[in-house]
View 1 (tube, rainbow, N blue to C red):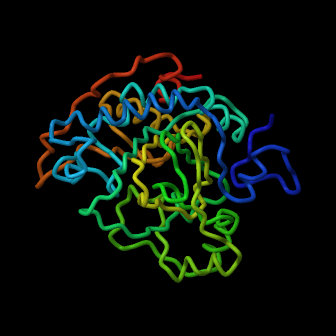
View 2: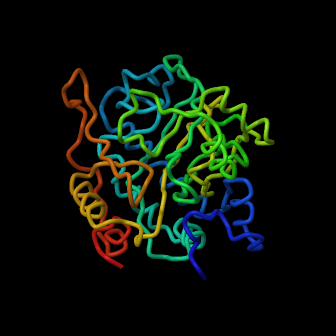
Length: 324
């Protein structure tokens, strides 16, 4: 199987006769049953146990405690970028699931992959202290052309029409190059360098894609399903309208051969510190650092995971510490 050439979303006129056709056409796909529903439940239990481990009074049976006062800091009310969350044993166990890795290997044409030190998302529904608004964006720099990163969600909870979950602008990946080549665009002046592979769209820009036939789709999935999307696909998350606690693991894989030695060295350093990075496994690797409160490290921060992973040969290869 020949690897996908970076810069080409698919070979001209080529079809595969499997889920890849849907992925290349729509910019996303749901792989059913990448892990069993039983394993998904096990991983979700581990995630929820982690969330309640901070001794801040959070009680998952008492919704009055579902407020920031009782939670560690998060991005967008559920993405835990700190507290060594990315390196808990259950996270690494999920990353090493054969059914999770195999679809990425099929897309890239190689099983010699690196994985992002991405994190968990646990979004509690019904929160009154959260202001939620759409933030349509892509996680690939306009300067990068072609298929360069494939993002993934390991789904641990139901993601039906009213549950929290991923919204994707269907077909937008195929228009990525045209948009940035023909339309005026500008990054926000205050955007940090770490967000190079990120572009937020304004409402007028979203309309450009809709006018060309793109449609915003709520991606539905069941526990154990794997959601894949092209990083050029416009997307964002929907806040739960149901009673379901959204629980997912982000996992992205790219060919190890794409990484530079200095990036591999940095990944190894961050693994040693148990710190999270961006969605990108082989480049644009920035540490999420420690959670801060009033300029000081959050007292709830951790120096190591609650349950450290076993540093298997597979883990070290996926982490970029050991060569294939």
